[in-house]
Image (cartoon, rainbow, N blue to C red; front, side, top):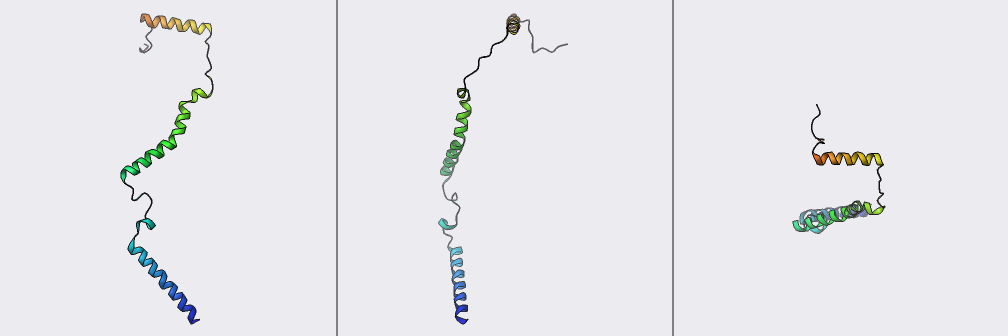
Length: 103
């Protein structure tokens, strides 16, 4: 029993010694977060690289959505074409005032 207590106290003493040594030395490689010591340009470069890599593919897809499926041609019926031509003619003459307030 006495031998067992001596082993326990020796192990506890070793743990206390290790903890005290670890807290006093403060080695940067064991206890520091990974982004604590890189310089500001390196952090900025990593941030820009991560933003470009994360947002690059969705942006590429959104810009090329027209190429995914063919554009469908829309055709107006004849009555609507006549109304559009009449409005274009009135606008060219200055008689179509769309933005004026109606009384």
